[in-house]
Length: 138
Image 1 (cartoon, helix red, strand yellow):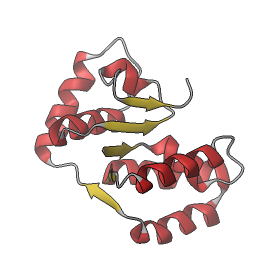
Image 2: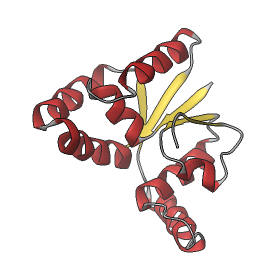
Image 3: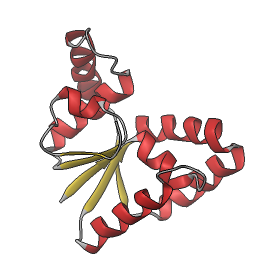
């Protein structure tokens, strides 16, 4: 199992006051027990640091930032090619509220042929990951 982790999921994982904190920890633990491989992107991490700071404070964001390298999560970097694919997705789906970071994630997931997504964001299901996305909330 190859899993991509999105911003909101990381924020829930990091913020002990988040309603999905326990669930996020349980899901990650379960995936690791199954020897699943975890992935994210540098864009998602940048967005995550800001979201955690906004929701849980600067200290929580710094703790997540400092502890992240210890996690067994591969970080994909958004290349020029991925950015161009993301732009095409962003332009094509004018009827959706996809953020550009979401579009870079979609492009990376497609490019690396990942199996699953951990997200609380309905946009992943709206794109085309309907049968493989773990959307834990709408």
